[in-house]
Length: 253
Ligand SMILES: [Zn+2]
Image 1 (cartoon, helix red, strand yellow):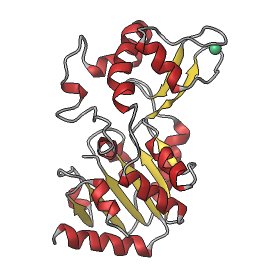
Image 2 (cartoon, rainbow, N blue to C red; image 1 turned 180 degrees about the vertical axis):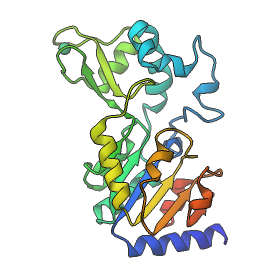
Image 3 (cartoon, rainbow, N blue to C red; image 1 turned 135 degrees about the horizontal axis):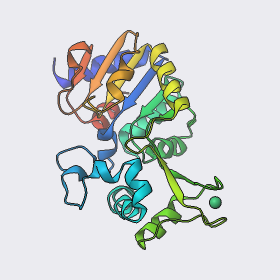
């Protein structure tokens, strides 16, 4: 089958279903210009004093917060600062609005699915951010929330962001290495996948925890993988489309 034929097949599957779940990885955001942590050109291959996996760990955050926030600013916040939702985010939001898409489960932390939802007027409560969001930040002492612009400004100035109310350290609501996923988010994602008729997985090679494990909950009719390169689960899929996720979803009308 050519990609065009596969997209035609996907289009008819989507047209017939009102119980679709989307699971997305870094590839969904790279099309908005947000670099992929784990890709060849991503920040894991860039020079830094410590490996990114070390800096982005809970232990490192506790021990060396200045260095953590310097890295966090330079490699996480700054590259995504002007990112806008792309065709994939917008099409998914549109399907939510039409009642076709039950859940969006993402490993990305940039808030672009919510931005797309606001752009098209779709609800946001069906978005499950497994690894949290850079847009939410809370004081470790009093729990006050703090917007990302404040974190950006202080970390850009080489400071650890402090709560304006009590002076406590402000932590991004992002799941660091060594930290567990939020239980409610994970359970919501599992419930949605377990109940889905159609599962579309895009922009992930399915090697990063917990992606592969979550997919094992799927019992539906059509498993669709959209990724530029092969994934570890291609053999199980009903349809594998080796193409950009934005291009494929945009063609699905
Ligand atoms: Zn505080």
